[in-house]
Each structure stands twice: as C-alpha cells, then as structure tokens.
Length: 112
Image 1 (spheres, rainbow, N blue to C red):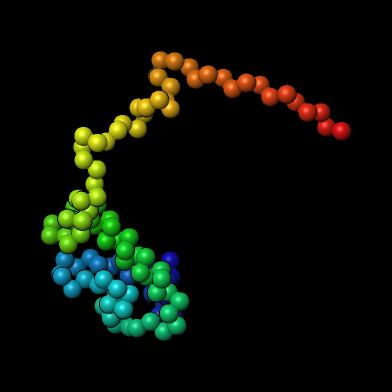
Image 2 (image 1 turned 90 degrees about the vertical axis):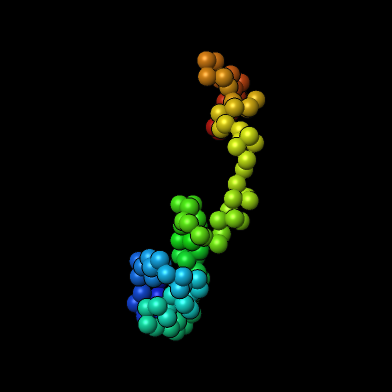
C-alpha cells in the first residue's frame, strides 16, 4: 500500500529499510526517508511510517533478535512462568465434562 503519496513510497519500501543487520537501521521516519533517498514533503504520512517502524521493532523483539536494546525491557515485562494462569481455568469457565447452565427464557412481547 502507498503510505507516502508525495514520494510514492509503499509500506514494503519502508520496511525494507529495516532489513539490514547494520546498527544504522532507521528508528524514525526521517531516517527511513534518508535511507530511501528522499524526504517527507507534506508530513501526512509520518504517523503511518512511525507506526510501521514501531510495529517492525516489536515484531523483531518478539522473535528475540540477539543484542536487541529492548530485550531487557521486554523480559522485565514478561510474566513469570509460575504466575501464568491457563486460559481455560478459573471459576468463570464451565468444567469440560459439564454442560453450561441454560439461561432463563424471556417472555415474548407481542407486536401491536
């Protein structure tokens, strides 16, 4: 999809600037534009480009890239294994061998 109509840049082109393993990968829209040899004109695309860059960095941290500066912060916010509650446990979930209780029937109102 085209994210910058002034420079006719697509989201794929923006994301390709992050593919290099060099520490000079862009961290801001201005750096991404410089990597592509242009500059923002009207500025309407900057929010979208910023979101693309942030989403790509989050995905990279989820993959666990070595030496990621966000790895320490990411690990600090991850839940400890002994604090994780299985999704299907708890009082709000019916046991697997029982049928859920039926809701009481509501009276029907006749249309006039």
